[in-house]
Amino acid sequence: MVYRLDLRSCACGFSYVQPHGHHHGRAHAAGDRRSAGDPLASGFYGRFAIAFVVAVIFCLNIVLIGFAPLKMQIGVVWFELLLLFLAFFDSFDLSLPFIWKNLPFLITQGVADDDLCCGAFANIFASLIAIVAAIAKLS
Image (cartoon, rainbow, N blue to C red; front, side, top):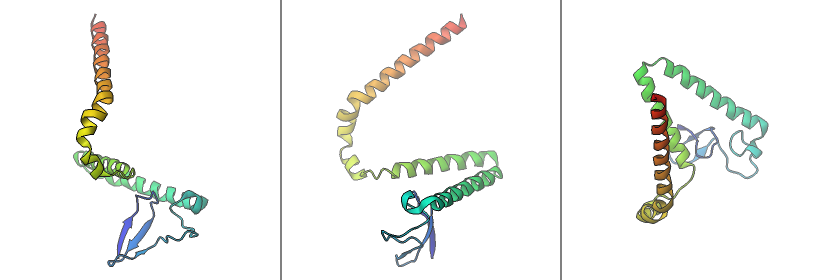
């Protein structure tokens, strides 16, 4: 029996998977009233249970990181931020093969014309303002 935390459906509920692939712990019936999942189906107590589990995990994370040396704390926090970013990126359900196939077009035509030029001009303008402000502070 393997326990897993289901983050893709934003359920934050525990379920277990048996080795041959049958899922238990979360029923997928339309009329099922579970404590995690769709907020309209789970009700107040489901949202409270999710909030409680997330708060306990967050507090345990802070306490356990506090026992580690500073260098390890920094590495753990950056690793957790990377995992949160990847979970956020995965929540968009992007088609990565489509993106990789059209990447040359996106770089040369779709992105370069507007976004990169606008960003470059904004960085140049902000740098000029910073240089003028630094010179003004020196005098």
